[in-house]
Image (cartoon, rainbow, N blue to C red; front, side, top):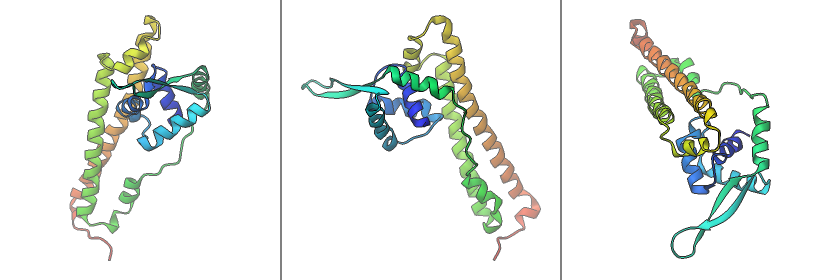
Length: 201
């Protein structure tokens, strides 16, 4: 279960409250494995029951209140080691935008253009976000990454950081390919024979 693995990787950098874990998830590993808060919190409870993590109260505020902080256990670390030794599962393609593009004969040119321009806008934002993430890793500006590095020998820091960047570069290249693909589609719409066509009745 990749959500579980993603959460455990964050906790392997150090203890988190549920709020901090969700926040760091969305600003880091969430670029590699998306999940809403509605999935994160139930998964934390499941992992606690299975003793992959432990939860304990920590002070919160000035009136004696507490909140739960979570830490990975030895069993959680073992889970990550086992997960890394398993083969990657590749799922069949399910792309709504490509399904639509394959049947643009049912769309007017305006709708087809709107679809592709929306695709462009989405992946341009992805490029911007991922480049920012890569920059933070290169500059060691990420607090959670600094906490992670502190748990390893200094001789390992460069390799750990490089593979983080490598992962985000994969997302970046995919996003750039999606941008190029959408631009190709817009170019098809601008071709004279395409512009003269009309949707099926």
